Amino acid sequence: MNTMEEDIQKILIDQETLKARVAELGKQISADYAGKEPLLVSVLRGSYIFMADLTRSIDCFCRVDFMAVSSYGAGTVSSGQVNIIKDLSDSIEGKDVIVVEDILDSGNTLSYLIQVLKARHPASIRLAALLDKPSRRTKPITADYVGFEVPDEFVVGYGLDYDELYRNLPYIGVLKPCVYEKN
Ligand code: IMP
Ligand code: MG
Image (cartoon, rainbow, N blue to C red; front, side):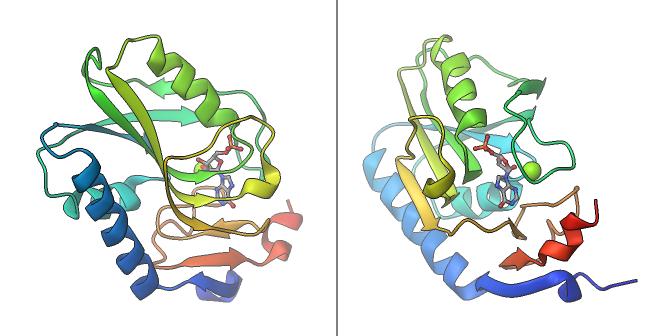
C-alpha cells in the first residue's frame, strides 16, 4: 500500500506560498467589502480548508454558510451534471455573497450554482476560487478573486480530492496519472 506522498508526482504550490496568497486575497476582500458584511458561501467539500484560512484573513464582519454539490463521482473529468446535495442554511436575499470554491475547471459547477444563487436575489454575488484552470473552461465564467492559475493537470491537497482522498495534504500537488488511470 502506497503512502499519500508516494502518489504525488510533484508539489505545485507549497504551504508557505498558499498561506501568503490566501492572506493577500483576504486583505483584498476586506478592503473591497469595508463597511459591508459579506456572506461567504463555501462549496463543499473541496473548499473547506481554503474557506477556513480565507475567512481568518478577512478582518471585516462576515458570515459563513455552506453548500454541497456534486458533479464528479470518482472520475477526474466533470460529468456536466450538478446536484445540490446540501443547500444553504439561511436566505441570501439582499446579502453580498462571495462564493468560495476550490477550483474553477470546466466552469460547469459554478455557472450552474451562480445561476441558482442569483435567482434568490442577493445584493451582489462574486466568486473566489483558490485555483483556476482556464485551459479547460467550457462555460463563460471568470472568478473575481483567484489564488493561482494552474496547468491542465489533476491536482489534489489543501481540500482538493481524488476519490475523496488526499484532501488533508497541506500543499497542492499533481497526482500521478497512474493513480487514476488504473480506474
Ligand atoms: P468544474 O465543474 O469542471 O469547473 O469542476 C469543479 C469541481 O471539480 C471542483 O470544485 C473540484 O471539486 C473538481 N475538480 C476539478 N478539477 C480538479 C482537480 O484538478 N483536482 C481535484 N478536483 C478537481
Ligand atoms: Mg471534488
